[in-house]
Image (cartoon, rainbow, N blue to C red; front, side, top):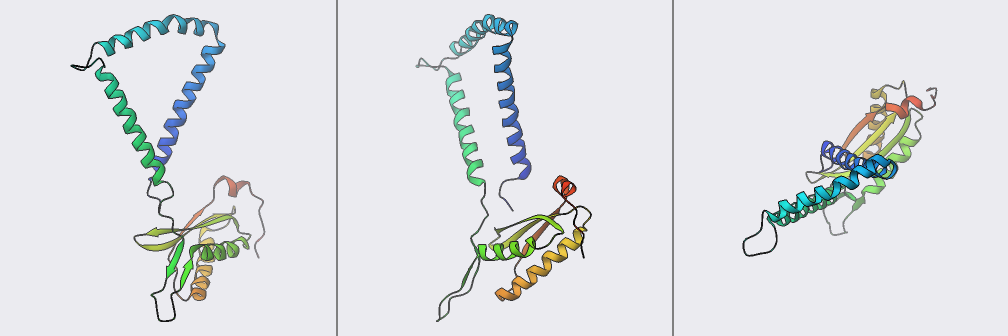
Length: 201
């Protein structure tokens, strides 16, 4: 329910982290190893001269600048635009309104999504079969939908967790006077395996 693909998020984070790691390790090696530092000092002028030659070999007609400068600036601008798009897409889809009734002569009723989130959170926190839970509200095709992520304790059936969540959703719907659309995600994982086991009655 996020406009940014999860795979793209992780790929971007991995690539950025890998580049930073390589640069950091390279800087440490150059600074700490004498042979590498000497080799870098000997090679750097040659590399600079080669790159300068490339730039000089592709001048813009009528200008003193190289096509390479224009290409580099264009790539940097494109990268900045992509990063801005990536940043602005994060978190989109969240909504602060669960529903709004049609206006009447007596007024209009609007239910804040935090009301439903807090009610569901309090209800789920009381269940020992859950290690943790998190509730948020997203706008899906114009319809507010609760996204409920629950981490089941080790040995607890996912169906039991779903039944628990659906029961509280039914109670919430009865309280609000309408059915509340929801997406339920149940997981286990490392936290569930390392958490203290609680006997269920």
